[in-house]
Structure formats: C-alpha cells, structure tokens
Image (cartoon, rainbow, N blue to C red; front, side, top):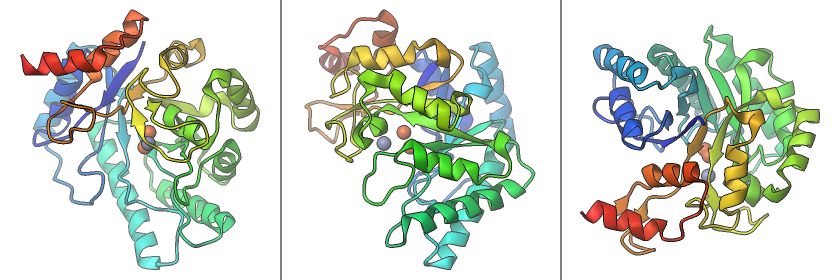
Length: 302
Ligand code: FE
Ligand code: FE
Ligand code: ZN
C-alpha cells in the first residue's frame, strides 16, 4: 500500500517533509514548495535535499511516489488579465523546475477557474498554457486534479479532463489526480466506482491516473462544495474509501490523504492535530474506528 498525506515544507524544506511523513508511518507524501496561497519561495538548499533523499532511502520512501502540489493561485484558465495569465504560466514553470531540482517527478495541478469567460475558451487557455509550460525541457508529469465544481472550476468531469489532455502535445507529461471528495461533490457515486472507471478508461485511459487524493466529504453527492472530512466521518464512508485504496488497478499509485486536522472540539480552530498517523493505521487495520477523533485528541494531550 503506497499511502501518505499532505505534509509541510518548512525551514529545512524536503527534509522536514520527509521527517513528518515518517512520523505518520507513511511511505509517501505530498507537499507545497511554499505557502499554497502565495508565490514567495525560498531558495532550495542542496545539502538539506541530499539529507532528505538519504532519509527517504533509509525509510523505503520511493521518490517517484512523492508528489508536489502546485499553488492555488496558478490559474491557467482565464486570460482576461493577460499579466496574471502570463504570471501563472511562468510561476508554474518555475515550480516545476523546483520539482526537478528536488528530484520530484509529479506535480498535481487544479486545471483552473473560468471566472467570467466561456468554459470552452477557458479550456483552450489551459491547453495553451500547459503546452507553453511543457515546452521547457522538463520531465515532471503534470497531474490534472478532478475538481468538485465549486464556483467556476474546470476539470469537473471526465469530458473536460479529456478535452484538456487531448490538446497536450507531450502526452507522457500529462496525467490525472483523482480526488475522492471532489469526485463525490462533482456528482460521482463512489459506490459505483467501477462504472466511473470504465467510462474514464474508455475516454482517457486508466494509465493516466498517477495520484489519488483520499478524502471523505462533508457534503452530499453533487453538492459542488469541496469540504474534506476525515476518513469514515463523511458522506463517502470508510469502506468505500478503503476499497478504492485497495483497488488492485491502483496498487502502484500513491494515495494521499488531505483530510482536515482534528480540533479539541469539532469546531475548534485553535488547537489542531494532524490525524494522518491514526488514519493510516485505521486504513491498514481495515476497520472503522468511530472514536478516532477523540483518540487523536487524547494522544496529543499526553
Ligand atoms: Fe488539490
Ligand atoms: Fe485534492
Ligand atoms: Zn479539495
């Protein structure tokens, strides 16, 4: 089982991320190379990166399973403000260069939001931008994430993802990241995951799936909300999610948890504890633990 979670990328950069992943008993992880909502990026520390790679090796974390996530502010869909569009293209290019320097082979990207322009135009903008980014001789695979359909997001069904992928020149460098919360919120019934995959395979090909984000959802199918919930505590449910994790077809694909930190009370925003060590353990156990959140609170208070 290749499973991990979103982790932070702090002062010691990838070394911090690896240490955090190990503390969760994970064998992979996903990180942002800086704050996801801004474009401030620190210079990469080569020495720390060497240490990070060594630590990964010692802990059997295959760097090919490690994933970077592009920042939210990159929007390749809207070109109304040309400066912003151009900036998104160059920033994503820089981000991919950073991945390459770190040794990372995959980056997850939200395709973008159309905000006020025609959706077909928006798809064309994404294709143009991605081809521009990929013109640079880089070998990082861009994985388009399946989106929930919040606001004017694109990539909210297989057809839209296919439309983008079909327009990409360098086919080896484009893939998909399935996100279970987003699929649910976009209207896919994950109890019928096989049906979804069959259609996906016909249109895009299952070989394009490179990453899976495993999240439960706070909202019902088709809600277009995108609010993640801890595994088993949402509307998708424990067994459906564990079945997806254990699906033989995705045995070699990294599964990444992006579930929320647990607060002292359900709506406590001050004291928050990372749930990943406990969620990974619960997934491996194969049994849902309805006391998971309370146990996490107790553990961290020790
Ligand atoms: Fe995402
Ligand atoms: Fe996601
Ligand atoms: Zn999400």
